Image (cartoon, rainbow, N blue to C red; front, side, top):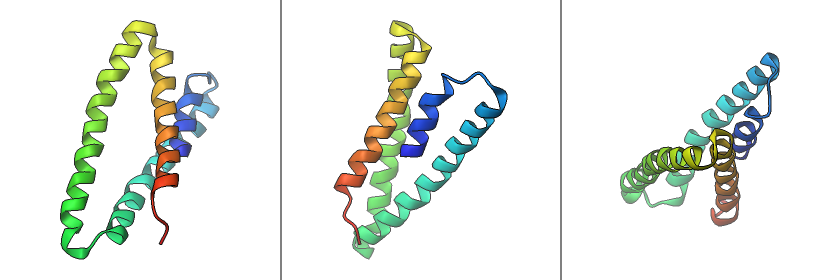
Length: 107
């Protein structure tokens, strides 16, 4: 998620096509790494009888994040401009990665 956040923020400051392609690939790689890692972590941290429920709760919060992220981004974009909305989402993504690093138990 940290890689995603950095790539999101840097996208708005880049105007070179090749650098945009590299940042987009970095964003895609970061995104591809996040979901299976989350599912694996949930599987390791929960009792087998509660895994399905835990994954369902994870997906609920993930999907709510998409919905609230879209609403908040739209409000910030209308209020301050599109660049501020993108930076905000990048910062939230970075903060989320830091919170996960601090809060998740290591097995």
